[in-house]
Image (cartoon, rainbow, N blue to C red; front, side):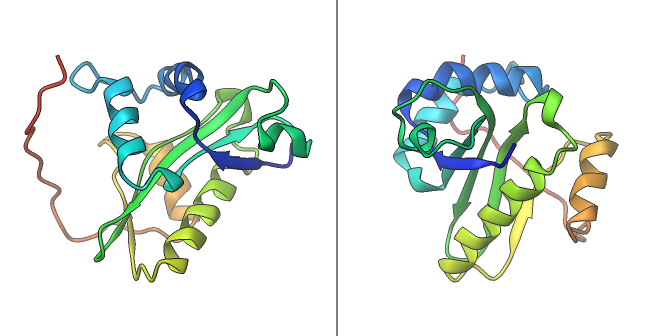
Length: 152
């Protein structure tokens, strides 16, 4: 499969949530539909999906195809971030995740972004290895968080 990336569309919501669930990215304290709505409100052009086809009609939205990958990027003027990157389990190891990251890096570089960060949950050695293979290294920083709006 040659990846065909396109911006997220609202009718992708359920497929993206199902993909994130299949990839183990969902957590009880994060409502994925709210996270999607928040991303669509901020830099929606950096919310991409990959569709399972080589046909241009699929990327244009004129064909019914499966969403096989999804990810969100953002740039705050200082750092870029990639979140919720998921590739369908049956396509993991196919190069699609690598292609996603290359596309996000290109989009962020085009915006003048000097550095991109990703966060990986502790213990997720396979994903840490994936990012290491792309040249990402552990920063000597501790990520802190504080919930401002509860997703209940």
